[in-house]
Image 1 (cartoon, rainbow, N blue to C red):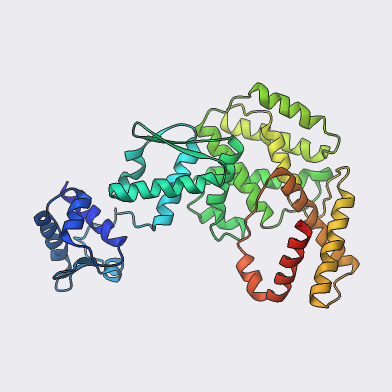
Image 2: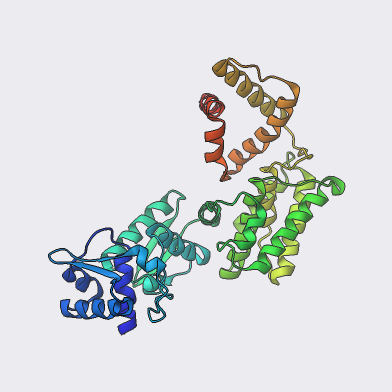
Length: 378
């Protein structure tokens, strides 16, 4: 109990910018003021003449954060304390709930490692609920448990939003990223992406560039997580929806075939059956990605792609007074517009971690394109 109180006290001070009174700390960890004095004295005794916890009469206590980070005191024994920002903490909790949704998790189990006060925990729950609302998901609290309720696709969208905002700009970075801890799953998904790239259109040697490859990787990695953590039975509703999709004459048979084969490979990998509609979900991600050297053989969208491409170039030209209209740019831009329109149809979002760099290096053109896109959207 003594070690736990020390950890809790330090964690509370880590997350406070200013001084905290002994009474406030005592209320947070359910102890007395005298106990706080003893804990502070015990911790500071390990740090020699320079205390880890600074005290000022009338103001209370404050952690010397830099000294804490730099400390190599052998007796400190604070390595087990999880130091994360409030945003990171909430994201970890939310991700854990999403991966097992709609199953319930004990509230104490979710928050115990962070040593939060009751008020901080309630605040976290409120913020998590607000974030989930953006994905049309609901956080349910009942009888000491928390769980997330909503559609499977919305749950996966929320997970994707959490794990894609990690600064990754090269798929190989995932090998060292904590968001993808099971490296055997990482290797399996890598293999499936290579399979897709080399088997489309009679084994064309191609690749899926960033950020589409990261989006596809995340979708498949999340599928493995969800399949392991939840039961995914095929419902009659899904069967009916799938039948309707498969009768759609605009589908590209090559992409659909390779999508269904990847799902079969995944079933063999996890030794479990997946809902048949997973093949179509994967198809949506493929048709919404740019695959170099490959144009999906879909019906009815060519004129829209050409219209949006021409209008976008013309609008940017008028805004910048520069000439961009050449056959090479039209061809390349249409390769981006086509999957963009498919993503809009399929409600798929991608996160581009190069966006800030693009804004800085190509500010004028970026602003012109942004204005043009807003006009096209209207």
